Length: 259
Ligand SMILES: Nc1ncnc2c1ncn2[C@@H]1O[C@H](COP(=O)(O)OP(=O)(O)OP(=O)(O)O)[C@@H](O)[C@H]1O
Image (cartoon, rainbow, N blue to C red; front, side, top):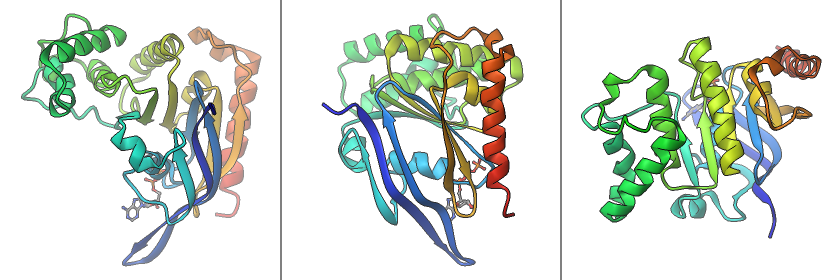
């Protein structure tokens, strides 16, 4: 079996707007392999979210092709092949944390026992065991974001699509969640596509970093990380880490060159 989870070939997406066409993605070629942690980084408007949404079948490409687990994004969505984590936690305030996580499982018709088992499992995974009966407003921003990750994990899909999940959090909370996410990735072997604006976050988390440039949204560079899987936070002071961060910054600068 192929270990390619996502394969984009000459992918393009042009939005037709009242102000004329917007080329959100153009000539995008990328393969994401099983178990990769791929970050997408680039300036605002370079098409990161659009690319993730195409993978999730939330937008339709206007050129080229894309497959998810060897099938169309639509088939992958129907097969619940991925979990999606949005920028804001987006929890329903009138439901408990457990109730929020159970909601999609209820809609899909899982038995009550199975709902309870899965909810307890994913809450443990994100270290929120014991918070099932709390309401979102009783949790900090970082804990709410962890709960939204738990909700995305509830189907136990092998692929996680994460759109800047920690962008709104302060540095210390973000560092902690980055560490936890890496551990979760290591333990579960999931494939993760992760959108971020932060160079240190991209370098710390990823096995590959995809640098994108705007107008039209293209891939400017793909960097394979030589960092080991196990990454204590102070790896960010290492020479290797700083060298990768420089290369990402150079890629971002080059993308701005013709502005
Ligand atoms: N539904 C839409 N209709 C029209 N234009 C859109 C639509 N969605 C996105 N765009 C445009 O497509 C381009 C890419 O947007 P996208 O949100 O993918 O960028 P991004 O890199 O994720 O930006 P940010 O980092 O600010 O979230 C932008 O110019 C945006 O305005």
